[in-house]
Image (cartoon, rainbow, N blue to C red; front, side):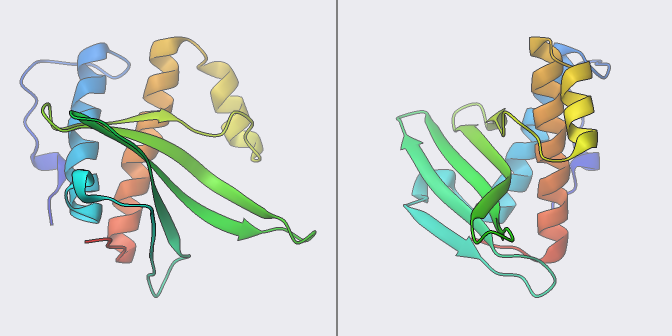
Length: 150
C-alpha cells in the first residue's frame, strides 16, 4: 500500500499555500491510482463493494488527451424514496503531471459542520484546499475499507 507520508515534497510548503496544495494533488493521485488503476481506462459507471462500507460509485464524466474527469460518490436512500449522492466529488486526473484534483462537490452541504467549513473558507485557494483535503482523507478511508475498482 502506498502511504502519502512517504512522499517527500520537492519544496517547502505550509498548509494553505499553493505549493502545499500541489503536494495534496500528488498524494491524491497516488491514492486514486491505487483505488482505480489507470484513470485513462475508466469507462461508464462502475461500482466497488466493500464488506464494511457502502457501495462506491465511479463514473467517467469526460476523457481528453491529457486529463480524465471522474465522479466518485455514495448513494443514500432518503425516507421519501429519493436517492442522495454524498459525498459527491468530481475529480480531474492530470495524466502527464500525475496529479488528481478535486474540482467540485456539492454546492449545498447537508451537514452543519460542512456548511460552516465552506462558509469560513470561501476564497478560491481556501475552496480548493477544502475540497482536496476532503478528497485525500476520503481516499485514505476508501482504501482502508477495502474498496478497489482495479
